[in-house]
Image (cartoon, rainbow over all chains, first blue to last red; front, side, top):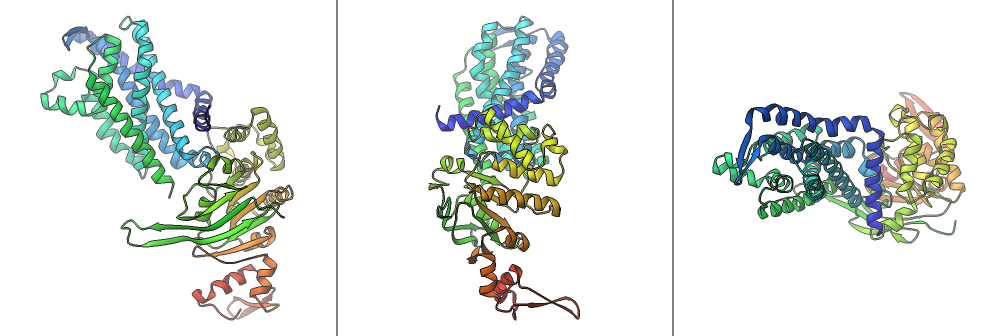
Length: 256
Length: 272
């Protein structure tokens, strides 16, 4: 293993050990929240809606919303861990600064942070997927094919969070991306209804935001909806862009 | 004191203001060496450039120009090799609050690729030395300020560094904790560690440091042993100091007098 990869796994392991130390707290925040959404929208709203038409297919609303909550879990877990978690670790705990004066460089610390955040988001999303399998909405093998999409999606939203942390002067300022970016995506990017139901102009706008692309890929893998090449391109492009911004903003902020 | 584990060569760090119209010379062409078993002090008030110098020397900030060598490795071009030999205690508290006292040290050792068993043994020794054994399983948040600082210095030593850099390690500490840290630094120096210490406490610098660089507005004004700095710059055997209006004490000159003398022309203080 190269020195850099070793150092990155050291940082990842630090997060993993910290996760295990506070397991009850993390179990609550990581898994309970998506399960609440599943219950509220899958069981609650799902009973009212019945079947829906999307991309030439008829699906049960419950299946549709279960797969949407996989993508929503990636968004919330990734953004809040990278954003609020990243801000606390950078500003209050000064963990980045403490590690970056050892043989582990700041660049490696930030990669470790992003990889851990993506891992955590992937695990949370897979738990939602597993519930979907148990409830009979998805096939078990779809959970395996989902892993790379979840990991990239988790990385994308973690990087969005970490970039926000890098540019926020105070922890309160993270409310701007939270309310202007995360919540609109949550409501308008196809988690709860097909974006084809929106006016055409809003559909174009929805495709600019990365959650629409992640939703589309997750639904292709879990529900067998047609693969949209554009979704893959948009997700990869946003991942590269946000990872770059996250690293740039943090390095600019910490290294004078 | 023949080897030089830490060499700083013509180090400068300049900043531009936001409009890029003004260049601030935070550190300006400083050079010095710190030898094995030597404690070298960077002495100056707040704003003299001590912390910026330390951040450049530890490789966290890139310098505008110049070079820092740790055991021959350039800290900016070969950070891994250089920092493997370096222990740092930052001025601000950077303890990892997600870990208890002993795990804190073992975790830090893992970044230096020190095996867990070895790290555990070293950590226990350090906690004994720093009087923290009874808090071995304590959460970092529950420690007092003095204990946290001791733990942070212990953490800097867990990798057995050949160069130890401490940025204002005793600021805000009680006198007894300060003395305990001084004892630990003396012990580390006796083991051959090269220590770079930044401080604005004249007494600390005079007592601990073999040599001192007097830093003012980013420039080193002089480097020498405390005694020689005093004898070189303060000719009088006793100096007079007005401690209260009309009450004048006579005392032996100290580093504070040297500092005032060296920077006095700018401050308008004469007569020492």
